[in-house]
Amino acid sequence: MLAYRITDWLAPARLVEVPVPEPGPHQVRVKVAGCGLCHSDLAMGQMPGEVGESIGWKVPFTLGHETAGWVDAVGTDVDAGLALGEGDPVALVSPSSCGSCRWCRRGQENACPHGLVGRGYGRDGGLAEYVLVEDPSRSLVLLDGLDPFISGPLMDAGATSHHAVRRVLSHLTPDSTAVVIGVGGLGNFAVQLLRAMTPARVVAIDQNGRRRQVALDRGAHHAIEGVDPSTAEVMVSIVGSDSIDVVLDVVGTDSTIAFATTVLSPGGALGLLGAAGGSLRRPWFGSLPRDGQVFTFQGSDLVDARGVVALAATGRVTVDVEPFALDDVARAYEQLESGLLSARAVVRPVT
Image (cartoon, rainbow, N blue to C red; front, side, top):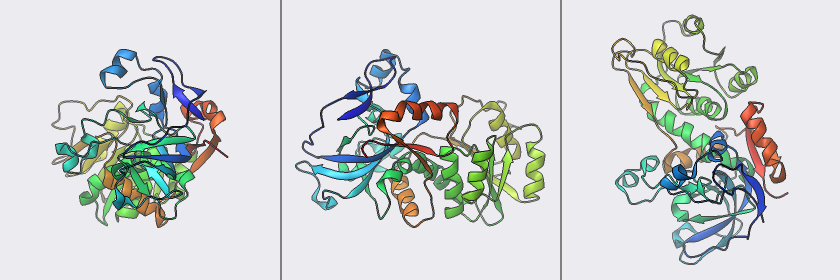
């Protein structure tokens, strides 16, 4: 089969032929319907070997951690309680977790110390015709009427956004406003999940006009063009005296973080999802609202993967995708990196 792989450290990924994997004990083989692309994939080809090996990665490996498809073959000793059958539509949970550490026992799988290596990051992922799944009881989500081709992005971008919204539910009431800065892949899901899970008014901020329009189409009450010195005044003209109780910053630059701390109301929550390298400036006194909180994280928990799939199955979350063929995956990554995509790039390995 064809697979899009990183074959060596500091080398760009490329399409190569590899054997179709055979499921062993406790494994399931999935025929891939679609695999979403992520900006983090681009950084993996630039990782030095000493860094990758220090966290347990081994080359070569196939990229792709937003994967869904159909059960193709079931190995021996797979938990009978799953009742998996060939042809069942499934999505593959993106974060890897062990299920036995103190974090997993608490349901905080995204903090699992074994989560640094997973499908598509350090071992074979879904940019291929088939992918193996270990520990399917923790790794597969059955799709209830959802098209597997579009479901992969729910496992990373969707679940990560669900995690952020779940963290701030207690802050949002009917007189609250939630602000999402950056409404690309994750931010688009965050807007939809805020509308589906909370009564708050939602304001989207993005420099890209197409993304702002998509956010409005997906339920944002208002959309603002970028963050600049006048944005706080624009925000006041929109929300009036209502509190801005939540800001989800999916960009993470100095300017977006400073803006977020400026407009956040006392007792509010700032979720930092963006990885642009911005800083939260000291001194804390005066730069954060009274009783304010800041949280950051990477990934999601199993409850997030299952929750966002359930919302998508009822039509409360929509997955916007741009399809690409596997032999066109390099162009898809180029468009992703250049910001030309208005939806999640999803690769279909077979036609």
